[in-house]
Length: 278
Image (cartoon, rainbow, N blue to C red; front, side, top):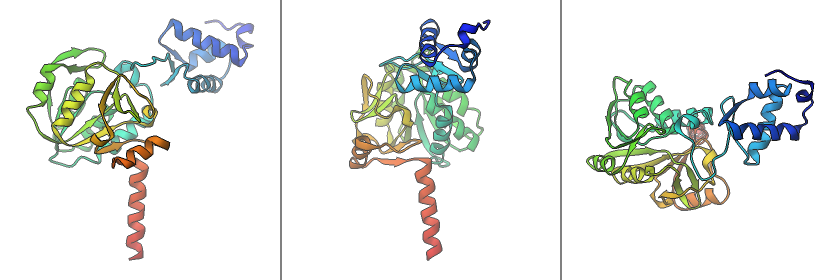
């Protein structure tokens, strides 16, 4: 788009209005495109997007921004472009909780895809049961992993199967642990925005000795339509950051084991200092 002297003189409030207008016309806008359109630097546009994100008027995405969807969930492809570094760090850390010979269940979602990718790279000898085509494809690349894909009704936007057939299949197995994502974690518990995902998650929980939720900090404080689990049903919360305030207090009171990459490093350093003192 040709730049005009008028577009280059846009003030911050005018840029904000234009960004929101663009998002009414398309699902995603790119920082580089907006910078060229406004005649400003990409850093200026990133600050604009950060301002609008704090106000809840848009959602930051890889290389740009997306329109918000209150009370609903983006498609899997859209979510994969959000909080990329956090998801990768969380997935890699969660993979360290899996040992050779473990049997696990993994549900569908962008965060557990990173967990599956980390498991594949780690070459863990595991048996994994999943309702996610993406998780099956990723983990199936490992020569040591055995993957069982549940049948069911296919959800194209999530690349996953759901329904009675899916849950009946999962009930045939008993595993060491399930690794589950979620749309939100608040004082209401773990909640889910995608229809029928909650039933699959609860079925996996019922068939697992340990229940581990992989939830990044961007989902703290969010409550969606369907409750998946109360605090008492969570064995371990794996996240990139520690929950704060009332949410953190409620989780600790319920006895939830909260693990983050930082907490694991702190534990390791404390153990080293203790050994050195001995």
